Image 1 (cartoon, rainbow, N blue to C red):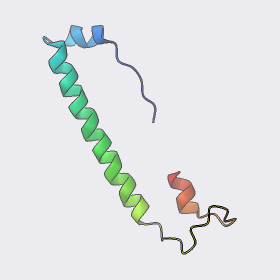
Image 2 (cartoon, helix red, strand yellow; image 1 turned 180 degrees about the vertical axis):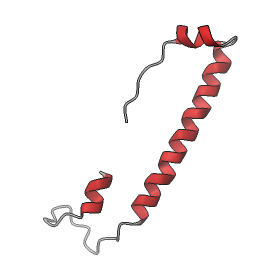
Image 3 (tube, helix red, strand yellow; image 1 turned 60 degrees about the vertical axis):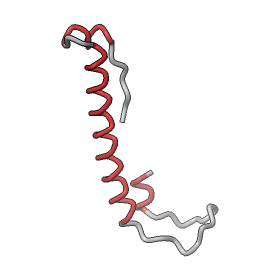
Length: 68
């Protein structure tokens, strides 16, 4: 997911109070982030835990590759 900057002049054109608009947009960003975190944790829970925590393991789990 790509993060793009938002020009404050654009926010100022569309709202009466730029500070209030920034607060509203930050709350919405947190909601989106929380939704993404819940979805990520749900996918992460479907991956069976590995009995071996060795990072040099040659066998790769396709579900883990999909998440990363």
